[in-house]
Length: 301
Image (cartoon, rainbow, N blue to C red; front, side, top):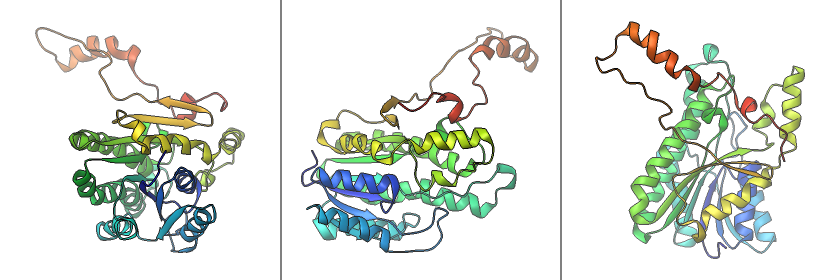
């Protein structure tokens, strides 16, 4: 399905990214396995994880090269793309998967914790995607696959930085889809449910938290890969600007912001009339202050 396609997967040394790289290589892609080898919080550097995935791909008869540049810096992001050009002469797919977590309640979150997560997720997605854009334009083809999260789409405790970055990626992905459409380039988002080392940092102290973690453990990272392979392929040419979620064997098409209800007053509104008429009229459509686990409340299928 991906024969001779050149694919960059960022954050591919572990978890979902590793499964993406292996699955795409198994379908014929030549893969740039990017991972700086940092901890979940983004600290440290180790070439081992990326090289290990490359070795797995080669052992299975595939083609891959390792890259350890950071997505969070413009110059190093360009080196990731250059690694694909130097090794294979082209680039067909960018999977923006690299990420870190610095979870903390909003009222305790430091500026450094905020910036670190925004830099890797949101800036990293822009930097790598922007670096690839001239090649996509020049060849009149390309695929962007961007990772979002229900922490941003719906909400979660203690993840203001991560949620803001992940919802920002949705807007960025849609803009990329619009701006690159005339060059036959697509851009879509995947929101994964899966047990990974990032999810493994979720606190599990109360019975409710422990039950949630046990549910997450049943969701394999490899279940996300088939959708990514499809979106990377030529078969997905007409699929762009969409947000998908994958949870075990379930695939969801997620909604995007559209008007729910309007109210009109010919003489215009005052603060008082808004409180007396507009808000009561719209209240039935208000969203609850819910979290991802409140919306996806059933066991994985």
